[in-house]
Picture 1 (cartoon, rainbow, N blue to C red):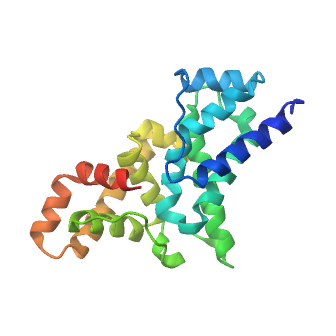
Picture 2: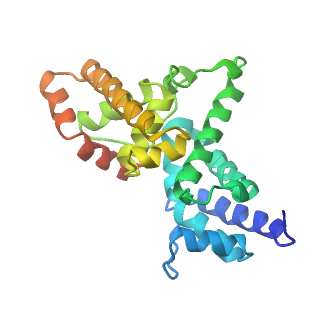
Length: 233
């Protein structure tokens, strides 16, 4: 049930997040450290500052999630994601982590965005279409080394669902259990999809690499290259 303070809470995070979206530095909360669960419980009990703090803590992660998939629409989708969390926080299952719930919402918002861009959006298969299928989206990352460039390009050429999985896996340090929560699927299914996503990525990398040496260099240190790219986003 929506309480009397919810309207103010809905307005306050939105305005703060809009300012954050306009700042390249993103959020930099310097207050006391609280775990997500404590902040979520306090927010549900009416502590508006806890809700804002929770959003600010995860703002950079959500902004990064959209940056390689939505281009200039990214800031708007970040806002939409956090506002959706305000509207649906009571539906969050007790055992689900806020981070997994947040990325689940972000994924849904991303898919809605793609459907809005296509007349046949309702029939889009995100296990088949890639970010490239929606037209070029300028990337903010500039890599001076070929391994970094082809990794970004390869991610954008595999199906969107698999791109999301790999970015959660490499950039957000999520494992199968976490990804299963985000996608709302069994953990075993998540493991299978992670393996499949890696296979698709390796295939694209092999096709994009200028030489076998570059391909082997990228594959042998995939987590390292992914980590370097993450810093660029």
